[in-house]
Image (cartoon, rainbow, N blue to C red; front, side, top):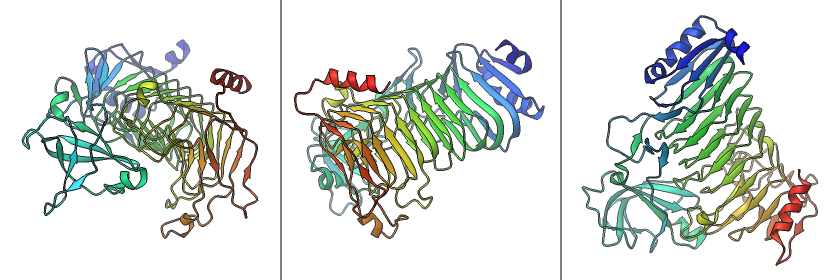
Length: 499
């Protein structure tokens, strides 16, 4: 390490002024043709503005940029306006995120349209205090709507009815009744309830696009809060030997945390993602060779979103040895939708992860959306392997599976997984969906092919459709546990075999 520092440009960040000048210092090193730069932070709290570090068109294929956090806390700066739904909220003194959304509640009835008032609806919500139209400015209603948490503007609350304005969504407002036969659930955001917290507005800390670099490393940072908008860390069309995020903590993020497109050799390791509103990691179809390993993802998707916590759509990804606890739709998502013209390119492995929901999360009114899966697989895949994962204690209002391969998914292997206590849906569900072949917007004309299932242990129902005219599909021997099995013994023996 000492030799590396002697051969590189070193810039120390010891206060906010140094932090504000950081972009200029990195630009100067790039112009000077430096090969290595180490940015060393002193412990403390720093506020980043929008696009704090923004690099575009950089051509420095030998430059390695290392940002060493040393526990520094980076907070999205406020914008001077009143607190609003798009802010992330944090307690600066305690250095922790503040959840501005109340616990999920169940509506007393389905939404009712007000006649002759375009777009105006009411929802029966007993126990909510009255709020006048003047005081309701800025209030939002998040309403479960099949696999979506729809966000609407609140007009007022009167006598146990929430009045709100509907805007179009890809799911219909009564979808909860049609697909789940269950009453919708909701959360109310009120700006005044978050008035005492610090409202983060800046969303993006680091963005790199259309650039060639030797490598990028972020290590040892505590990112605490940002605003809705751009991803916190955003990489597009970046050619580097590696893009690494190690041993960081991401807490209270209001936007997507890490997003990459047309960027290869990504390494996300040993980090904590907690209390984030949307997803944590999104690897788009243009990503090749990404590793997501040894991370902890705790209680994310707070906005009742169907965004997967880790979403993989590229090639050569590995999602391994991570721990996922509490999410609103899926922990891991892989593949491309049948309407995506990119086609069957997704390839990678999801293995040795533990995915579960805590007892507290499963009690009371669930935040989990219906019709999802702890691991969710879209239709189009080139070669996806889901193996040796421990998925347990998954519950929700309706159709909440362990592994869900939807819409006639193709080229998926499901093997060696242990799935226990998933009462809200099937342990494994790869269902027949020939209708997808007939849809006008479908980019795939032969579904339910190339799938393999073998060696899984289940204590609940499973469904794995094998197309009769497809010799590439295979359903082998799986173990279905009988009622009254000893869970501790099963888990211990399964883990010992998979070490």
